[in-house]
Structure formats: structure tokens, C-alpha cells
Length: 167
Image (tube, rainbow, N blue to C red; front, side, top):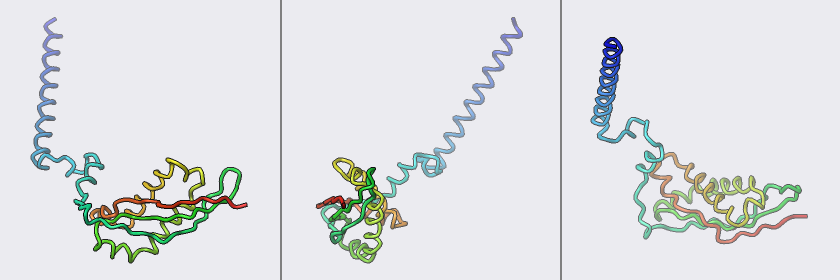
């Protein structure tokens, strides 16, 4: 009985020692990173991105209207072709950024066109259009490598949309 008890005590001592070392390592990591484990690149990537967001003054935000576009959309299940006539408005952080954004208008239109070329009429109806807005916003932000610049592309709106099936 004494042999089992001494083995159990040794096992408990090893576990306590292991836990003590683990706690010490965590304390050292927290001291090194200033309490922010994301600095090591092992934290939640969403949190890291959120920290890079710039403060946006919505009073300075400006709308950037893209001229009305007529785009071929993906045929539906019955292989019927369709077009969409759409107006797009993009909200930007400020007029200074609007000048930079305007220089890339051709690229913006190409992103809009390619996004809609890959959608069917069913994917553009009702509430589903909100997913397209999110996708388009994401693609427009991807034009900029710097997170501060990407964060200046705020919202996408579709003031007018008309889908017409072609015979």
C-alpha cells in the first residue's frame, strides 16, 4: 500500500511542477507582450484587424456615385440570359480619400462588373442582395494593401437596380 501511495504522491508532485512551469510561461508571455497575446500572432485574427481600423468621422464621409452600369449576369437554371441595370454609390471616409479613389474608378467599375457577371438573377433578389453588397465592399477594400486605406471604404449602396431577362 505504501508503494502505491508514494507513486501517487510523486505523480501529484510532477503534475504540480508541470502546472507551475506552465503558469510561469504564461506570466512571462504576458509580460513580454504587454498583456496582448495578439502581438505574438497567435490571437484571434479578427481582433488584430479591428485594432488596425482607423477612426472614421461620419460627418466627413462622402458618397462616390458610380455611373449607371448595364451588366450581363449569369444565366439562370433554365439558361435564360439576363442583364442588370444598376446604380452604385460607395461611401468613403472623406473628400481627400475620394480624390484617390476617383483615380481608380476604372478598377472600381471592373470589380463591380465582375462581381455581377458571376451572379444569377435569383442571387440578386430581395435580401440576397445584401450578401452582394458585402462581397463588393470586401473586394473594394482589397484594392488597398494598407488597412488604414481599406478602412476608408465604408459602405456600398445600390440606389437603383433593374433586372431584365432576355429572350
